[in-house]
Length: 251
Figure 1 (cartoon, rainbow, N blue to C red):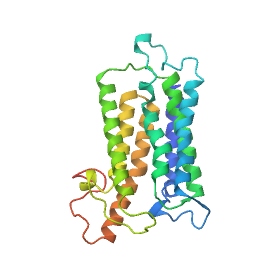
Figure 2 (cartoon, rainbow, N blue to C red):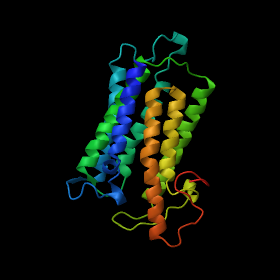
Figure 3 (cartoon, helix red, strand yellow):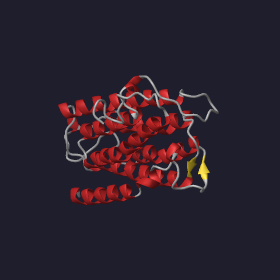
């Protein structure tokens, strides 16, 4: 089964990488899908992120052991239900909170559908692996460190999104330089937080699907942070010279 997962995830990662221009064509970088139909940003984010929340929840509720996870684990090492749902915190926030608060420009329909497919696939892989394939034990150092990284990344991501939302008033269509938080050091502070989240989650669960999605997130939103950084540098002559794209002091 692990070989099947490896081949599946490898193929999916390569395929998604090949369609990077399509996935990335929203917001200030929208271009590939024009002049196709667009969807309001709030609705688009809600619809595309919903599967990542509902599918793992459905798998857990329909499982014959919804309050524990993994295979061949002693009861004392089973994941308690609240702990095994740490990924749902992020997907719940992105689905029900971020989507309602976002002020982004309309999404191309093709991008929303591609994002929905990715979230559906990821939701199934994460949920299925944790429920039926997990063999590692929890409450070890790697789990605690991963959990810490997950929540640190989540705080950075949410705080950075808050800063971006409040850069301009409702109805304004101008770009401004984000300041505060990790934006002092990088242009893609929100992306850095999300990447740290997923690598923390991968460390905590010690699962191949989680690691695969963490790598995919790095390969997908990492370049987006770079293009944001380059956009700011070209648009604003007074953009901070020492600010990096994604990794403080390095890149």
